[in-house]
Length: 470
Ligand code: BG6
Image 1 (cartoon, rainbow, N blue to C red):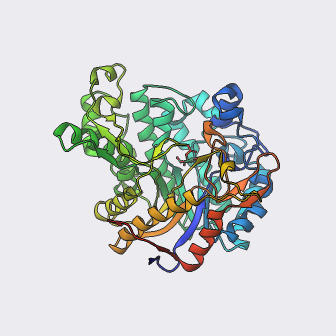
Image 2: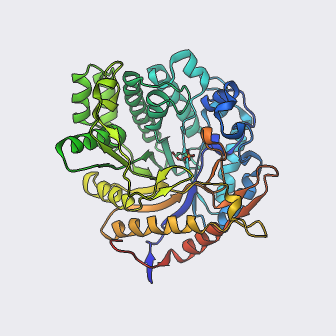
Image 3: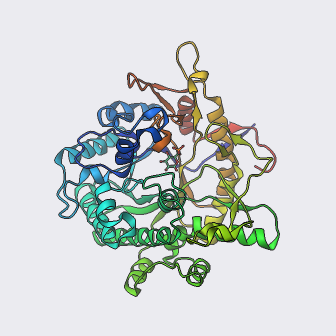
């Protein structure tokens, strides 16, 4: 057994998001998820929507106490645009929402927990989608900057870590290419490319604004960096993996860190006539306003090969003509979520940030294992014996630690998630929390993994039997 130790002041915590935890509270506007649920409840696992979620709105005090008992020194959530703002054009705010977010900030402080506040977690107000086209529209980019300004004015002195977006790539991917999030479009490749560009612009504009306000804090972005491993070393498979990396990782990572969208991707999009609309002034904003730190969400890798039928993806234009997802028969799976478990990828990501992105300060902002029917693992007292989750985290942390020993500048680890929370259309199918939430009673109980996390945080490390390569 070896003690895997982490640096002093390392962040131990977890993330959630406003729409997945708070419940509807003082809702004056619907975000896209609220709207999707109210128009098509059958799309949601067991017909459960976001109206109550984990009722963080009423339980935040208790939740912070429990998070403290799980050893947290930091925690991320998000401010909901559709809850804070009453009027999207004048930026008038809802005082009840202001009071709630102030209480959350205060309670984090009372418990000695550093709050990371995110501004967008897939929760576009549906009115802005209907009226202007959501992230396809540059008008909406400016309305988002106005919302961010309000947040900084109201809470900027009390929060030291901000992030502009969570997993921005999921918005074009899930909403425009593959249809698994509202507005559930499929195959809208050209529109998806404009969305990528507009969100990059929005992030840069918000960073510019934040820095201009001289607040004593830092601002970053949370990206899902999913390595794209090729099926083979053939020229075709390698090209597919490069394209996948350019589109799904680098189209946000490069602008965030270097202020530039990837050249190789731009060339392909130009050749195919689907490049986003841009101006030189906007490119200048993107180039000058990069992040202070990076958050990386990692769950599973992508495995890709050359596309066998590119002709199927030409009209309308879809990026899939350049790659195809490939299932590695030997992979280890989390059967509940249907995601591959591949802990070494966290090392590959860490080294990529170190070697190719100036070793910018970064942290793991989400990593976790969702398990269905966790009741199976309750003991006679109703305590969740989630050893699988502990094993999952230990393996990932061992690989992360190896990269850090080799110099990768990682300053923290946030799991997904603190207390079981609602998940888009999967609702409460897969549980991820350190803290069990009973949906009938909203009663909270710390799981075995929560107690383990507390020990890990107290000792700033854990004893572990290193496996080959780790
Ligand atoms: C990330 C998101 O993609 O993964 C979270 O930031 C999400 O919002 C988490 O809940 C887990 O994925 P899922 O789909 O199982 O909830």
